[in-house]
Amino acid sequence: MSETSVSQATLLYRLQTFDLGIAQRLARLQEIETVLGQDETVRKARQRFEAADSALTPWQARVRDLDLEIKSLTQKIQQTDRSLYSGKITNPKELQDMQEDIASLKRRQSQLEDELLEAMMKSEEGQAAVAEAQRQLNDAQAAWAGSQVDLLDEKQRLEKEVADWQAQRQQAAAAVDPASLSRYEALRPKKRGQAVALLKGDSCVMCGVEQTSRIAQQVRQGTQLVYCESCGRILATP
Ligand SMILES: [Zn+2]
Image (cartoon, rainbow, N blue to C red; front, side):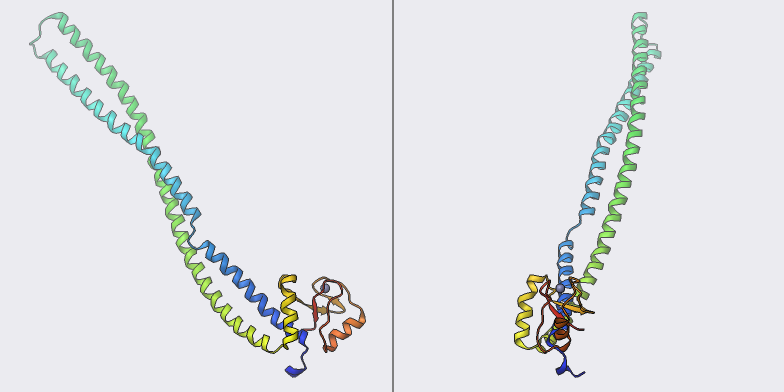
């Protein structure tokens, strides 16, 4: 079958294949544009990391404070101890007071050591949580960088395909007579891009409605544009 004997409807159907393919790729390109530059997962992972870090900081400060306090207390106990056994103080009341002081300082020391132990445990837990959050943040960033590369590859591929398809579309459109083309263009937006439907048996593929044998025959003859009785699309044979 030579190209001139192909019906206008068939030519329009071929044109529509390009138009649909181009529209599909343009829609995906728009999606990619939206996704590129967004990093929701990374943003959330960073938030969790910052929260874990903030929770850890006061415990680390508490460990340092308690450590200092215990050291100064230990010094005080040693000093009092030395004075007590220096032999310089002989007053029994004074000696008893010093012994009581030492006992009281030691009780305080023991209390602070318990607190330090708890703060160290909290600090260690906090450090583990920060390390885990850091690991998750790194993973999210790596995945994001990877997805960016994949998306950029896909974008390039789609842009090339769209350019190729548009060139072929132009050729397909040039093969259609202007009157048929303008009827197709007018119908396209009303049918969500599907202005042409194939006839399968005697039925319209798009809406499934069986056509009268006269209409089906006209479609097969291909001498004029024939519309589906039900959905109004141009009927074509492949
Ligand atoms: Zn139909």
